[in-house]
Length: 125
Image (tube, rainbow, N blue to C red; front, top):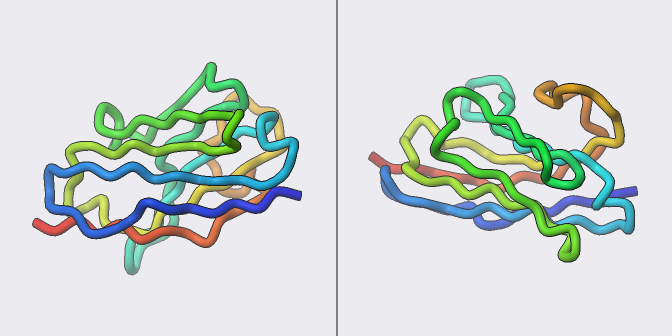
């Protein structure tokens, strides 16, 4: 069993930065791929980024590529999402999720077994 808790959200002006954290409980966290998703008001949940268990592979949605960076510190059971050059359209609730599955990609929410409660990110123009 893995429990995930996101933190680091808040209100920031366009062009600013935030770093989200996803802290996990459970000894097997280091073996799991972790993804970040977001849901904006009135929109469906969408993929943002993922990082595989050893950090050796990452992937990003086109909308955040070059601005967001996902990383992890398995010793701290934590995954980070560094968000730079934030835009108003990045406003959403951000969720981290973990999966025990093995795949060539992890862009689909249905692949994930564990989810956090989310942290709100609001970017003002």
